[in-house]
Picture 1 (tube, rainbow, N blue to C red):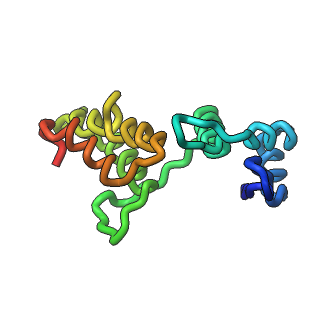
Picture 2 (picture 1 turned 90 degrees about the horizontal axis):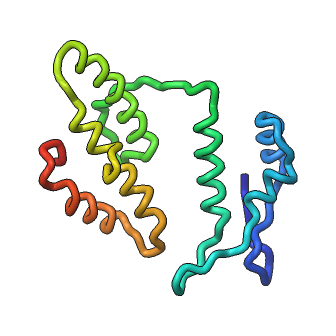
Length: 157
């Protein structure tokens, strides 16, 4: 779905509704209500303004994902080295680690400390989600928080 800002206004509009109609058809929901849930005005936090459309997309995406009756899993080797690692690759590796944990915990050894580092309350994923809410956040501020909170942990290296 593509959104654009209306001229001389802070309001977003839908560029093309062809994809939206397909999505709504697959989800079995009203196009009007679906689009209206995204098109919100801006929100002021301190001196900065945020367009709620970004957060609405994130929230609705999470809700759809949480209520999926089918989740496909792509199993690739976790040891591949890429020039640029993507967010999706992190989740692929994370999923592989969870499967590997089940096997290892039953047969070999425990990988729980590594998984805790990723998913616990102040784990890498929650810190990343929190950092995305700050308008001045950068990769460096995120890494700084990771180092400050996790440098003492044996699995953080």
